[in-house]
Image (tube, rainbow, N blue to C red):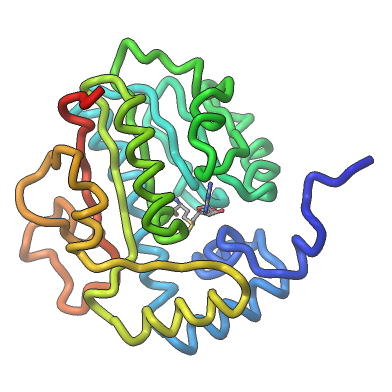
Length: 263
Ligand SMILES: C[S@@+](CC[C@H](N)C(=O)[O-])C[C@H]1O[C@@H](n2cnc3c(N)ncnc32)[C@H](O)[C@@H]1O
């Protein structure tokens, strides 16, 4: 029987498992934990940043369902399920989790089987035509708005692939749809972010935190749904008096709509 896991899969860190370890999860291996130790030595705030950014997902789902009446959602680069990061409001009738990591799909299948209307798909954002044509995505009702989460995923893509993903989504999504993006930034701790990128490069993984302006540029053809520039994930929709002095996010949060069609 052929394994669904590529050679060396368990001996090398993967983004999803490292993230799981940093978030206090147990779906990870020695290679992930050792690598995470190096990451935390370079950026001691990293576990706190992972936690606050993961907590953002359920907050966005609440916003999509309550404010935009969205009941079908695709979570692109969903990562491993842990804690309450898979809490989905009852109003979401169809939830499609997508990740390229085969371990994510294996776990997601087990955990998600318990929730009606939730499916897991292994697909790569590098091939958007295939991803959008895959059954669980293609079966969504494009006569109604769809919510898309791209949380902590674009930093793993170069500029060109990131633009390609966003352009494919923009022309595929029906009007009224909402895209939610979170993105690690170089604006708040540039040296530590550069050290993290170097460490990832050492294990063959491209990590590209971007400035607020670069994130804005990526989303230039999308219509922002909130005034002002991107805000940090910790301060997103929180009153100013609740913003922490030492913001743990090191990432921005934006919601946007595809706006007018260009095609
Ligand atoms: C840092 S985790 C973020 C997980 C989750 N979205 C969150 O916010 O907690 C990034 C995830 O993106 C996935 N990923 C990275 N590149 C991808 C690609 N090209 N296609 C699909 N998934 C990808 C990784 O496997 C990983 O699970």
